[in-house]
Amino acid sequence: MQLVAQGSLFQNKFQKFPSTRYQGSKVKLIDRIWNNVKHINFNTALDAFGGTGAVAYCFKQKGKKVFYNDLLKFNYLIGKALIENKNVHLEKKDIDFLLTKHPDINYPTFSQDTFKDIFFTDEENKWLDILAGNINLIDNEYKRALAHFAMFQSCIIKRPFNLFHRKNLYIRLAD
Image (cartoon, rainbow, N blue to C red; front, side, top):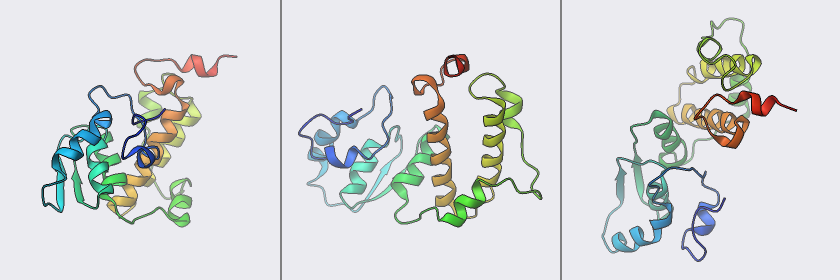
């Protein structure tokens, strides 16, 4: 899915930015927004109601220091990982830690207990609980946010039509 109309100043950069289906996203208005503020001398921006992050990401691409926030924690974590974060990456040792069940850790069973047969298989719910438990043990806030983003993307790709609006695990599992 292309995020910005042909000819946009940010078209190439936004192709790497995760797409969403949010109503009210400013991604189609980003050129107009930038053209109305680019003459202002500023180095820092706050996107307090960030949503898809389109405005914040544009400002970051223009070299501004951006603080991103959103009421939804999901969006907040994505903004922290992809917009506020300048140079922190998950290293191989981080990924190995995240994907390993450690015998000395007592893992939560929230996904297993709450979402059985709704969004994911039992095995996937167990994996999500292990991953979520390991993410919470990472001491760097940007690495935690990146790990959450990766987990979110892993969940979305498993969902029919990339949506979580109803129980439809049966669609993915059907022959």
